[in-house]
Every structure is written in C-alpha cells, then in structure tokens.
Image (cartoon, rainbow, N blue to C red; front, side, top):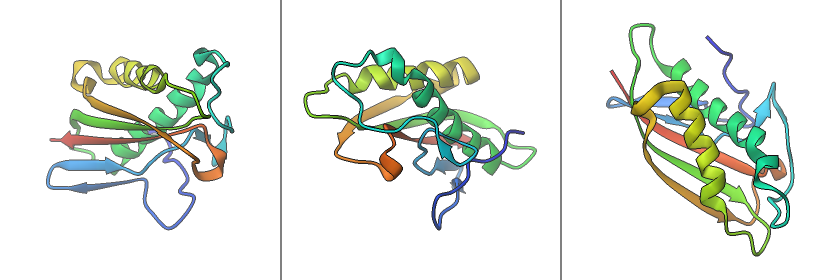
Length: 139
C-alpha cells in the first residue's frame, strides 16, 4: 500500500462515513514537499502542469484507499473538485481537470468516471498550483 500524503495541518488525509470516503484537499506534494509552485499561467503550456495534477490526484486517491479496511474497496468515484490557483485570464480549468480524470480512470477503470468541478481560486496553501478533493463510495 502506498504511503499516505503527509498532512500539512490538523486534519486526516481521508475520512469514511456511511459508505462514503472523503479525501482532504490534496496539493501536488511528494514526501511532504510541493513538486510545483505558483499560479497556473495563461501562456504556459497545459502539459507543464500535468505532473502536478497527477500527483495531487494520486495523493487524493491514495488517501482514500488507505482509509479503507483490508476487506473494503472503492465502489465508485462520485465526484472530484479541482481548485486551480490561476492567474487572471486563465480559462482552461477543465482541461487541467482532464489530466486528473484520465489518471483516476487509468487507475480504477470506469468506476472512476465521475462528476467534476474545476474552480479558479486566488491562492492555495503553499502557493500550490492546484488542489484536488475526491469523494468515493466503498463496499
């Protein structure tokens, strides 16, 4: 089992309730350190953010998996929220969200096709370029 992302405050990486499991908002941290920082820029190629998006999605998915007992498994990914620390004029939020969606579907198959929201925000913790939260059901 992969190691849980390291919380950056007084919270847990994921929590279960009534057959749902909710990840905390996950930034693109690896071993507690952001792999990319700064606002998502209008003129920078979207591909330059792909590793950060995938890392944040991986962190959220890992937190969910690690919240489950040994005899439990993810039934479905219900929704994903992608918060983008975007500079003014950036409008491709959903295209960054596509990187996360592609990653979770590659990892889990069709049970990961979910509703999704991509939101532009003024700032994120540690000046992360994005943050992802996932809500899943389990069985």
